[in-house]
Length: 140
Image 1 (cartoon, rainbow, N blue to C red):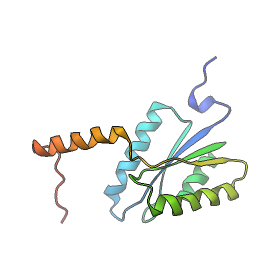
Image 2: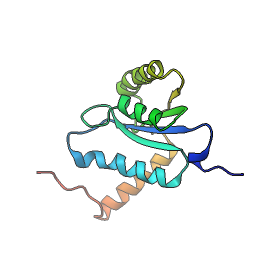
Image 3: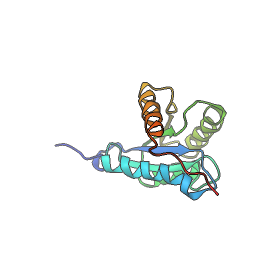
């Protein structure tokens, strides 16, 4: 018998963590990504969280995962580099969550870059800009 992600006895959650912005529109990218990942059903639980300036924060995101029955949570930084936020702040958030929920395993994944797939994304963005496509408008 094959289990769907929600039916697996050992529920694993994916908690995506972005920096966060005061501009609501800037935070929508992460929420869109979460919806796309949920649709793929690779993880029983997929949630968004933010380091600062937006809600839910990381601790609330972790709590949401546990409330949905997660037995393990992967904290995935939606950052390009392992700078101070990833190395210090996210490591501390993982520690706090582990202490608050000792029955749950929390693992901090590597940030998005460096990754060979990002080279393709960079080249595609440059190609579209060169052709006059998808250039970001200036904010007022």
